[in-house]
Length: 419
Image (cartoon, rainbow, N blue to C red; front, side, top):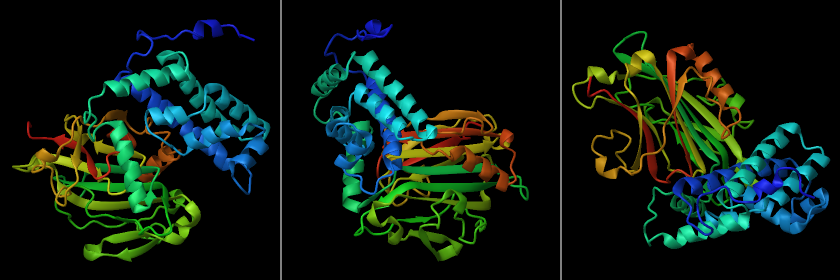
């Protein structure tokens, strides 16, 4: 039975001939659609009230065929990259049947709604780029055949995904998302200096039993001389925000040099493949001079060094308007080196092109929500409130990257040299 409007949707709405190569933007649409499915389908599979989660158990519980379940599990685990990921993914009809089955077993609306959105995005991408899943696969195959050997450098998504998988395999650990949020404002005690609060989150951390534990430590929240920062101890764990972390917090805390604290993930919490979250916050007063006061190196730089394989990076920076002084930030990517954390001035040869994307969130925090972290808006609001800051006095910027370069440093920079 053909519903009204389906006949018009059967033909591809694209200017490309059948089998024509996908553009970079079109490839990104495919990847984003698969990422949406991965999150939404994975949430449903995780919710299913089953003691065992074998394919046969899930298929029997949902009354679906095992092949569809196999493909749904594959997409939920992010198996494959590029063409391989699309080839492994289920068709639209299979995902729709999964959605109907999930509703029959009383999956909550808060999980079904994101799945509906993901299905719409997936359906639209396949329709727009070829008319069917197989047609888009053919176009993607043509794309890869036209790519000269070695053309895909470390800045391309497929290469970064491959690097992520390799690093996760070697280290035995990975995370769903790395989150960093830094807020800068003029110091109340010295207007020429800046205060800041740096919040870091490791979301969905998983590790094999034989993996060495991961650590989080603050070695300086911003460029410049540390003028004696202090650590938030709201829950007695030296900066751990327990309201936004796995309970109990999955870390052992030890004190390091200079009053720093090292948060070491306890392997007992990640046993059996359990995913855990940890969010840590650190506040520093007079962390650096405002760069406009300096004679050389008049830049403010804040970033994230990716020493752990992560599926996504969420890097937010909020600047008080008196800090910005009309300067527009830029995003930059560098290959990691031991001195990268000191200054970017001597690392221009380590810069990777193209530059990562940078989005202006505007004034305040009304646009800070993100599907990468369902409590991100709540966390952002909490950090501003606990710091006694008015969000409307700040302008936010965001660098969001899927499969960030492992071993790379992502930075948001302000250059005051022209002032």
